[in-house]
Every structure is written in structure tokens, then in C-alpha cells.
Image (cartoon, rainbow, N blue to C red; front, side, top):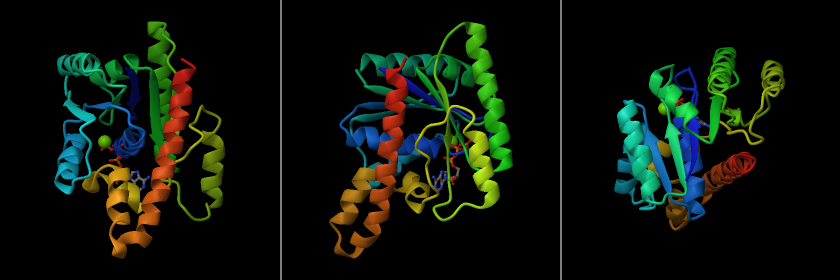
Length: 232
Ligand SMILES: Nc1ncnc2c1ncn2[C@@H]1O[C@H](COP(=O)(O)OP(=O)(O)OP(=O)(O)O)[C@@H](O)[C@H]1O
Ligand SMILES: [Mg+2]
């Protein structure tokens, strides 16, 4: 099982949304995914519940709660024993022993950041913290930024400058754009299942295009992550 951890000191950086997008793409490709939810608010458990109600879930995805080190270890062991292809860890914002354990016991760390000064500063602090931990432990794990919530239209001059300065750090090639399809994921379920439902409803066929674009973006990002994992 390959593990991918989404982390950031800043709350609301777009971790959980990116986890839901990548999980949607992996599941669409027929992969089995174990989600390890270390956020005490349990957004992924809620996602699963909402999706089951909407009939947009897949039994190939499991969600484990892990809000302390012991339950994290148990979740990891259980998902490895059950033969999942990927384990995806959604951390809570901020620094903690548990977050440190997550970014050490993984194959890839992704740090989301929006194009705002606050997000970028916090992403840089998180990046340095994670790299520092890896150096102390003498382990080599790839770490990359994910630029999140990029406006769909034209970027302002300062957003372009922000993009240039962020790209000095290792970044995923794919950026997630600010889309309603991503914002509504938590309520609606797996992207591909929501898309199938919309396509079968004549009244929703046009808005289904937005969902299809978001799914393509999720697949492109997942492709970047697979490439990063292959280099491990
Ligand atoms: N690409 C996107 N397009 C539109 N909305 C987004 C996108 N990414 C995140 N959001 C919205 O931004 C808000 C914060 O995102 P999210 O919950 O994913 O962040 P987080 O890093 O998991 O936050 P926390 O630290 O609280 O766990 C949510 O309302 C979410 O719907
Ligand atoms: Mg979250």
C-alpha cells in the first residue's frame, strides 16, 4: 500500500478537498483506497455518510478515524491487512505529534496552498518543518506543494507573481482550480459517481460538464502523485 499525506499548518488550505478529489480519481480507476481521517471533525466520515445517502459512494473505499497515535497505527495496520492499493491521510491544520507521525510514516507529502500571502507563508513554514523532520530522521520522502483554489479566469498581477514564487519549491504540475464542483464534493460524494448521476438526468446534462472538468483535473493531479510515487 502506498501512503499519501496531505498536510498544512494553515487550516482551510484545501487538504480535505484535495483528498476527496484524488480519492474520486483513484476510485474511478478501480483502485481500493483507505482514507485515514486524523481530523477530529471527521470530514471524511461525513463525506462517506453523505455519499452513501446520495448513492455516490463505492465499497472499495474505507474511512478510518485516527485522532491519536494509537488509532493511527491501528488504522494503518487494518488498511494494510485489507489489501488497499492506497492509503490517504488527511491531517488537521496545525502542528502536532500526530501530524509529525503522519508526514514521517508516508510515501509522499502534499502541502496545499492557495494563492494568498497567508497561505503561501504557511505552506513554506510547513514545507520547511516537514523537510527538517525528514532530515532529522534521515529519511527521504518526496514533498510537494499543491496550488489550490486557483481562480478559473484571468489571474491578477500579484497572483501571477505568487505563482512564480511558489514554483521555486517542488510543486505538483496540476493545480486545482476554484470550482463549485470541488466545493460541493463533501456534500455530494465521489466525483465520478455524481457525474454519472447528472449525465443520466436530462435537466442536469449541461451542468454535468463542470463536474467532468473537475474530474479531469482530479485525474491529472492523481497522475502527478503517481509519478512522484514511482520515483520513490
Ligand atoms: N479547489 C477548490 N474549489 C472550490 N472550493 C474549494 C477548493 N478547495 C477547497 N475549497 C473550499 O475551501 C474550504 C476549505 O477547504 P478544505 O476543508 O478542503 O481545507 P482543509 O485544509 O481541509 O481545512 P482544515 O484545516 O479545516 O481541515 C472549504 O469550504 C472547501 O469547500
Ligand atoms: Mg480538512
